[in-house]
Length: 220
Length: 301
Image (cartoon, rainbow over all chains, first blue to last red; front, top):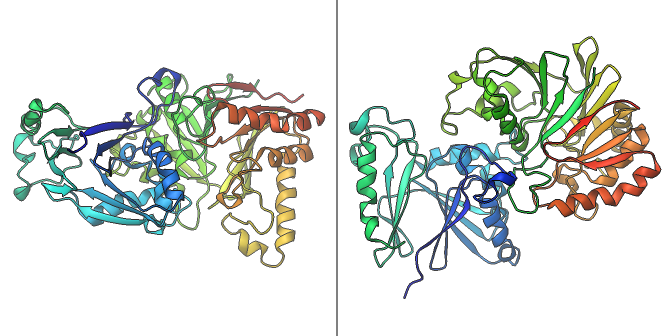
């Protein structure tokens, strides 16, 4: 029997961190989620919330345990990536970070590399980090262990042309979307959809609705 | 004719939200200097704390002239800039003072924050007029005849500037980020080349130069990210006893500990104040920890 598919929120805030006493209930760290399934460490986005996940893994990292961490990026706006240089496991050579997104490996590296740029940070690029970092262009339906991962392009203000130009038909994709939604399906068919930073305009709404529809029978 | 200081962000490295540190504050560095009788705002750095102040001011604040003194361009000191609402109105004018480095100009780095792949707001929405001044470390300049700014390169990666602001009889210095320079820990751009002939001599000159820079200052806000126990000197930050040492030599009235480590809960920050309190009081120096939202008057005694 597999463990249940669970989601943990490490950062729930958009745009910029808002650490205040009047945001204490819902949290002030920017976006980061963890999908808990089997023994895998699966992370969605690395806003500043990821620093607390990193702290929870620090003991294992210090002991020299091999950590393999899968990170799915919805998109590369600052609030979804900015915590990566402060994610403790990235400083340990026994850590492997697999960074996934439907965009090309080169673009992914370019976007994330700004966080480690020598003018904005004390580092010399993401490749100078001690851990092993793999950039992986995600294939639709790809598996992470026993979880199946599907994606859909979302409208993060970049999809101006209505339903046609936001077609989920990835083969004939006419535009280069900023953001993606993910659907994770476990072996029992339980599904989890993450669709953040999406403008609910006509056209895309229906497509996302279809994407989500199968979740309604799911208890996750 | 007072100059006041207000902390909008006191945290170093990154903003952090955790129960147990919210009373001192979790936003990264941003300081405002308040001049009630003048027609402008002055900010030192634009970490996440700046965004809250921007929301308060809105796009059309009471005054429309903004001066920014940027210590350096690491994320924690600038990540709030794109979220500062007054930048998006053509009625406002901004003057940025910052140091270029051999890698890039501040202007380039500022525009890099608005990179379309990383921020949904396009650069063309930044409607305020903007001027960028390249400050060479050691430069002094006046904003008004009675408002003088002095700079000093401190010991941190790239070119990091300490600022001393004098307004009539009031004065304040902001020293962040700064590592102990002893034992060849030369972190600032150009320091190694200058120290080549005699490292020990360079370190002494750096320290006495900083004392001179702070001399007689009413209030000094100093990076005390570490304690003596957890100091990692090559990370570019200082400790309370080292900050106090400069203040003692410079005859400063008040030391405010700043750039708190993101993992330091309120108790840890308070303990830093206590660790130097009696030594400071014996030398007639008031000590406090910077707290988000708190205002300080900067009168000379």
